[in-house]
Length: 139
Length: 90
Image 1 (cartoon, rainbow over the protein chains, first blue to last red):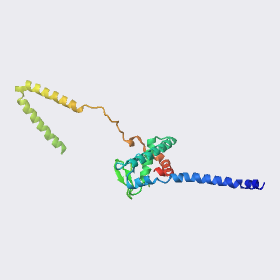
Image 2: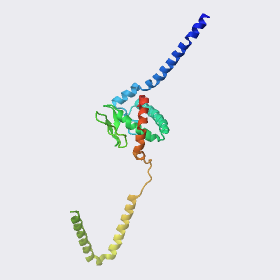
Image 3: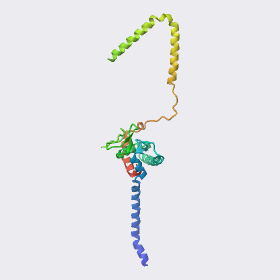
Image 4: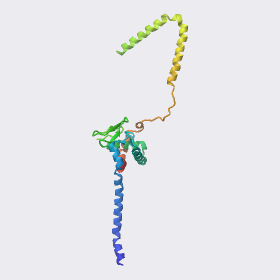
């Protein structure tokens, strides 16, 4: 009798704890996705991969097998996301990918590689990157 | 300046044609046959040069041509959010 009472008393507490842990889980899921894989971060910093103008990763220099596999994997994931978002926004995958590419090139930090509109690979400096005329202007 | 140059060239050409005409009567028939032959040869040679082969590789069209700036502007905010939400692969 005493046990049952205590259980009843603690039920709201247990529910609250459950809800809290669920909330934490859902919070930590995007937080985990925000972290770049160390191999990817390393390849970016070394200039082994760079941002192409079309919204995908490319190779400024011939890649190693491991780097190529990693970049291909990321590009497949990106394409899946582009496809979903493009459909939601009544645009083509290429249009959405290109727009994301404009922004991804803008997000590069000095030392990382990106592709200029003429197709050449550039190293990002403190200066704004060279981007297509079609890219949204930054103020 | 340009018109001067053109005029001079035209003169030179006229002189040459006249020279040919002056001495033309003597070998005109043979010359004609030869000229025809040369012309035919040129045509054949030219035909060979201009011949077009079907490309064995697909024609790549520049991506930018298909994309309109207004679409890019419309998608920019959404694409920015997408990158932030998936920054592990961007």
